[in-house]
Image: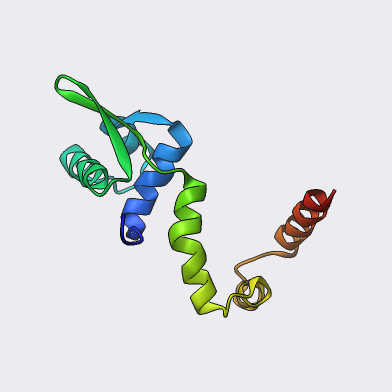
Length: 121
């Protein structure tokens, strides 16, 4: 696990993190249209396992996948440093950027404030 995942790989990992244990056909069902062929999904899942992001349980002709790294571990290891580099290690700068780009709503900002206040208690 040396590098951040591609957007497509992260999409697959999101499905695995949400479902906990999953077969490739279930991952395919959860993907947005147009869905790739099942062989493409299975190949991507196998590659994620080779990279150390997934564990595989063998069921003969089928494989069930589960995460080898939690979403929090992935975020801390790969996403947090990326954001730190882009925004000078400032959450304020990151939130300001998304607010200016209209990528975050006032309601979402309120939810973030509430989370911070609850964490302090």
